[in-house]
Image (cartoon, rainbow, N blue to C red):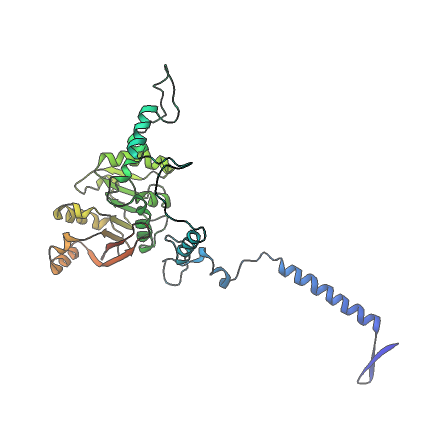
Amino acid sequence: MALSSSTSQKGVVITIPALVLSVSAAAIFLFFLLSTLSTCSCPPSAATASTGAAAVSRGGKYGEVSTQRFSPTQDDIKWIRDQIRLNGIQMQPNVLRKGINPRTRARQLQDLIQFKGISHYEEPESNNHTALQCPGELLVEEHHSNYGEPWAGGRDVFEFLAESTHLTPDSRVLEIGCGTLRVGLHFIRYLSTEHFHCLERDELSLMAAFRYELPSQGLLHKRPVIVKGEDMEFSKFGTGVVYDLIYASAVFLHMPDKLVWLGLERLANKLKPYEGRIFVSHNIKFCSRLGGDECTKRLTSLGLEYIGKHTHDSLLFNHYEIWFEFRRSKA
């Protein structure tokens, strides 16, 4: 039996077996094509990629997309809240209970002195120590309480400053009064080797930074340039260095106005023109005490410009932070 069809004067005859064979071949080809497409390891489309956390745009020039993220997103915060709620977690009193043995830093220090740590040599090797013995006061982290704000708040300061200045690993940062590196640790970890500089006057803070914080965080290889000094003397950092960010967290308010202005004069030419930023926390009484016009004139004479005041909602301080922003207004 044949199915016939005529076109003009010529007839085309297609048999049923041939038709079935053609349809089967087409189905097999379509099956393999769809299978290949479904297993393709092609990169996701722009629309798909933009939904990921890593694709959050942070700073950069107009039209550029940066994947760097410093601070938590609203989704991150919602996730934390959900985990606490779903697990029914409530803050409990820090008292002795099974598996938990809370001790004050004073008690920890006493135990370190009495028992020489967790394990120790007996006589005659009782004087054996590690390669570089760490003072007990640092081991129990007494220096974390030397300053007014919670130690964990250093992360918040880093996030705010890093995003405000569109920080990259190649940026150069100077902190005036880095203390025991509550904030500095986060910059050191992110920045390239030797790109974090600090001027600090307090010896205990410097010892805590060098002997405990940098080794305990595995950051010795980053070789931060931390210099003991006061009177706003920056010559030890070199003459050619230009900074993307200079910041002073709760430092200028403890210094005489005359010394602050001396420091700004010395730092003006060390700040990258236009793009570089100086951030000062809490207040700028060294400026406001002069009066608005007089302060503006003095800043202008140094080649600096006041940009504005920022109120930062801190995640770990449990309160808002105030920051004041300046830039170098001419090359």
